[in-house]
Length: 353
Image (cartoon, rainbow, N blue to C red):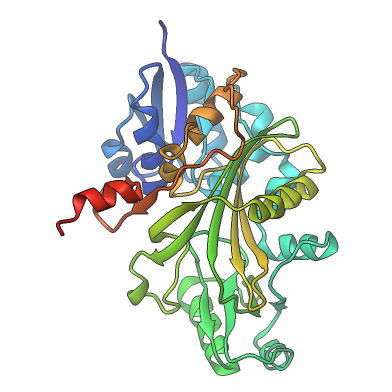
């Protein structure tokens, strides 16, 4: 049987490798890796490898379309926000399937400030947030809160880019000035919001033509290299566990339905934190791609998220009987180690009494 060709972008990086590791266990796929680095793509466990320009490059579209015409893949799966944005823009020119939400939804979710405003307009609970237009705004923004801690973060970017806790206007000014002067970001690239002190969740779901097919969630319990980060937090967990919470699922379904106008299609990864009132608040949507920890959702329950996604993208019936498929699993990971996924029973069996 001829193998189905699938392109994975960012091949060699952590997020792509977690997708690749699951797909490679199947024998019916030929994986094509794209990355901007010859070193990263060389280490990717794929069947063929190509170096491509960054998504921001004017040559990006021409280069990847040339490869797609030659290799004839059935599907392309992006693994980072810049490529999600660019591929969404050029979807009609790709010559292969891009199993994606509508471009309007993609563009909205990739701008956290625009999404915040959308959420407010559509009665979706979010942290109280204000846009920093200039450093002179910061004093008045702090005056709106009665809190010892606020959260300062960049409007765009993944992995908690430009995000940290701040306790006074001077700290916020220093933080934004640092990113402005040392990292080339604009002052207006930042927001300041209430700090959400509660539990931290990741909810991943796959939809087709407005219908939810599979949704899974996990709670982040601790973070990779947290001690070395100014915020002591990250979106990348060191320890996470699967959760089954109908209220959490309903909250996410409501968000996605409003965002898509009832036409959800493709992947929606939602970050949620609980506020001081123990209420769910959406913090961002990583649209059109998979979470870095997607292997937790691939290896828990009866149904794999990546298998479901592939079957839907290729117009096959994944035959999902339970759209909230769940089994209790823990993800344990750290730098330079392969992620480990174990049930509570497996953890207990490995411990010496």
